[in-house]
Length: 296
Image (tube, rainbow, N blue to C red; front, side, top):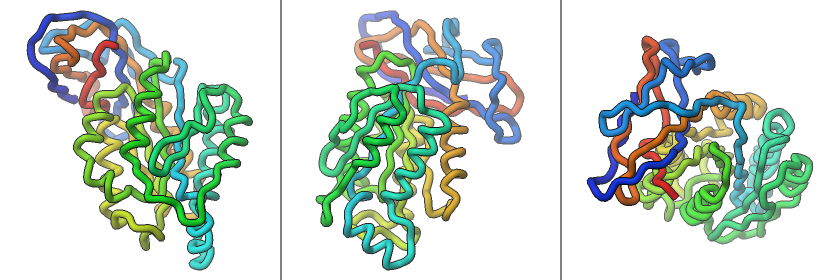
């Protein structure tokens, strides 16, 4: 079970909210046959009636974001010298597999970032057009320092304007930059208060990045911490070697096992009260946001 504790008492307001959650059983396997009567949602200790429950049958919007440094000529040269697959090749390969096998008919948009986020393709249901856009992404030979925190802020803002009840960000990057690494706390607050699931895919080598950034172990820990704030995940290509299809499958397995719940929440000011989500199935565990988004 998961406890969410938020703001104090102010004039009350009721309205619908939607939250996503994933459930694992006593064997740590995702629960794919959960029923409504196995879940309880309590707000400030009061049981709220679940008015909506769905898994992968509802519309989802996906944002595919790429760090431009992955496409730099300098990085490609360096990785080629050491016999490693370039970040651009790996990122494209994983994205194409996701689109071809799973996301092709969903709403998708594409962004690229260095010191800011550029939306290079607005929301489209055309998988071929999305792949074509990704293929055309380019970087500079010596790219400027990437700033993940600014890109995430812009991406979350864009997602919050979407009508879909589920919103998933897939962020392909080399490593976590030093500046964003120093802003983990504020980034976690941003992500935990959004109705967005974030999955990071790091293409960095275990030996380190070719650029000035956090040490790979620190980068991995930071990305894991950020992803956990959204019940998403951070995955690292170095552990999958040449088996990108296994990484793709793991990403999709997690995405498709999320449930979406809708209920009437009681808000005070801009923040909801404390929330408790429980699963009555023996040995089960719940993962989801540590916060619920306030009413628009």
